[in-house]
Amino acid sequence: MAHLMQDSDDFIPDPERNHKTVHVQHGGEAAEIDELIAPLILELWKAEIPTCQSCQDSPCGSGFFWLQFDEQGALERFLNMVALFTKEWGNIRLV
Image 1 (cartoon, one colour):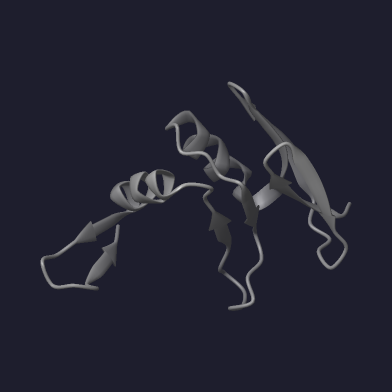
Image 2 (image 1 turned 90 degrees about the horizontal axis):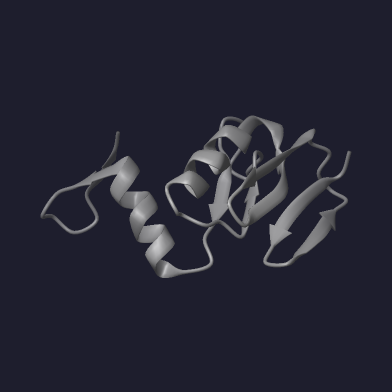
């Protein structure tokens, strides 16, 4: 199955990706999401953190995925959930 990227109201096929996807739905959000990150996307939506695109693959290599948020507030809420910040600028530790 071709990878489908969620993009607002439309789904855009990405022919370079061939990931198995699963249907994820919560509230008003619904999309075909890459199987390995579907549980994460569902939890984000439950936490009212909308995503607009995602992929279980990354150009960085195996073991990395990527998420795209459509608003700065969603990114801030995500980072507040997964990272501890120190007073030193740029010093982030993932938890």
